[in-house]
Length: 398
Image (cartoon, rainbow, N blue to C red; front, side):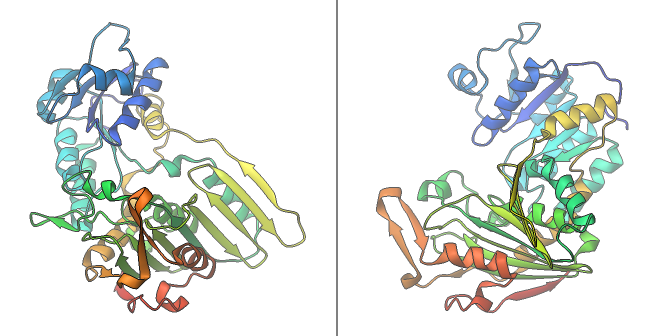
């Protein structure tokens, strides 16, 4: 590894955060947590408009690094990496900017935590991943659910035959997003903006964890693991991208089906469902909670811990720990993103299929909660479940 910090580097490691508003506020809080543990130091924040002292205090608390230094703020990412001698860059910026910013950091030997989705197209993903590899820096992709200790535990159960023969994996996400969600940024809810791919849809951004976690439990993480992808993309909201969609991935070992909506009637926790000939495992990936149901046994519920991805990146750089989410382990997910990118534009649901909940300023699709759950349960697409508004599925090869 040729970055600024290799195994054995001294702590705390200086970190620059690009994109400190929106979801970036979560990263500020997490960096503060790790700073208090002596692992990192917030050295800089890259934003077109600097955070005000009040914003920084609200997200980060009173600044108290060992040297009493406040983070440097600048709009020029490369210059900020240079002036702070950053060891790690956390990139939490609009999706179309990910590849270019990652390569700016890699060219300077700065290691990366890159927010999901890593890129809006497979070509951009490969440009990022190949460039990072050539630079010899570490790159962690920010799929936090893949840090859950439930994943290796479920894999061990599968390998031990707890479920008998695995027959497929489903995932369901029934969430709600109001009108303001699609007005939060110029790229929100867009497939393209000014001729550049964005692909900000239900399966590629807010519920991307459902897709990547289901693929990981299936053992299909690399691009070459994907044989075919079927998509059904729809929208109730007045946006370009999908807000109600499903995808089915075929691999040499079976099928993975993921159904999602941002127009749920009663929003709930998303989950992944492992189907077996002798039982099933439900994994609520945001809660690290697992329910094991198998023939001849009572139900067993287990809660697991989770390894933070930035903390894992620090351990990789200082102690040689294995990265949990290296770029190539998201190749299969990026094949799904590419299939969605190349699919026809989402179909607008007929007016009779949805309604507006005025009190919450959002649209709901009638009956979608049950459809999402049934799709995960049967590995079927919406059109196969009899949804009158679902178009024929679009099939692409891996």
